[in-house]
Amino acid sequence: MKGTISNKNLKDAKENKKDEFYTQLADIEKELKNYTEHFKGKTILCNCDDPRVSNFFHYFAYNFEKLKLKKLITTCYKNQDETLFTQNKSEKAIYLEYYGDKNGNKIPDAEEIGIQHLEKDGDFRSDECIELLKQSDIIVTNPPFSLFREYVAQLIEYNKKFLIIGNLNAITYKDIFKLIKEQQLWLGKSIHSGDREFGVPEDYPLTAAGSRIDNDGKKYIRVKGVRWFSNLDYTERHEELILYKQYNSTNYPKYDNYDAINVDKTKEIPMDYDKAIGVPITFLDKYNPEQFNVIALGIVGSIEFNADKAMEILDKNGEPTGKYTRNAKGTLYRAYNPKTDKIPAFKDLETGNLYSSIYARVIIKRVNSYGNRTK
Ligand SMILES: C[S@@+](CC[C@H](N)C(=O)[O-])C[C@H]1O[C@@H](n2cnc3c(N)ncnc32)[C@H](O)[C@@H]1O
Figure (tube, rainbow, N blue to C red):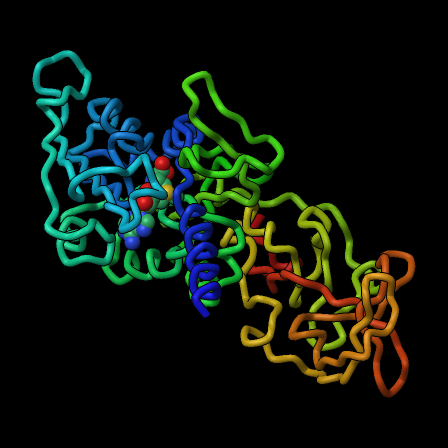
């Protein structure tokens, strides 16, 4: 039993470390430069930050005058287990308030940065951090990924503007997807593919490809699927996605359990199809709300399947496993096409027909029917 607990602790510790990825200044600059108009005269809060190591603090403090900010607040979380997170070692949780340059050297000097102690540990959910949140207009940070849902829920509850970094997977969380659908949250401008580098704690294992240690001994890893999430508007998200493919029923088969056609690549969305279309979640990188409505996520719980076939699950070689499912484990599916699909994933128990399941789809529909387009 003792062994089980310590294994769990180890696993938790590893998961917690994933919350300690430090954003690079270049990535912050590339995104934040698109929102200068939004920042003017505003109080900015970075509430999952350690100003001693945070590039968010660095960016706002050094650009305070240029951005015409009113105030910058940064709160620092004091981890319970400081042996794990050497970057955050401190006697007490702290926060700071910065009102800009006073002595004319355009540099945020120590005496201009008002460092104060927090009573508690600096958890963004604590009363004192919520008080600071209430005083702020725009929240900008990279919050701990394990608390992403809760973090966003709090921003929405307090009706705050925000620009935060997270993982594309978060789109498939029910509550995050609901915000996307309701136009209360969208993806930022600068990251739409590839991976990004993050700083990690000293004891983080550098096993992944692209990891490195710099000349000062600081460790870095590369992370895939990174995206900015925001409710600050920018021009490009209103640009029409140019489409050139024409619909035909052979190239765009429907799912068997939902009335929508399937599209595997965003650029292949047919320009002349007015009904429901299932697209990969990376469609949201190009999503213009004036062109398409987001209707649902293509998984059980978000859409209602109109078929309920009992099927045998096939293994990665297409061989029977003796295990069974309904609705392809709760995803969209369609008839297996040997020309386009590598291996069938399911076999109908009654008919023996083969099926391919289609994961991670967002269901969309044109705002204006093709014939009545305004543009
Ligand atoms: C992904 S890191 C990002 C740090 C920094 N914002 C950056 O991008 O460089 C998330 C930070 O949130 C802190 N954190 C973890 N749990 C927290 C909580 N409950 N409240 C506030 N901060 C928390 C972590 O210690 C860590 O410093």
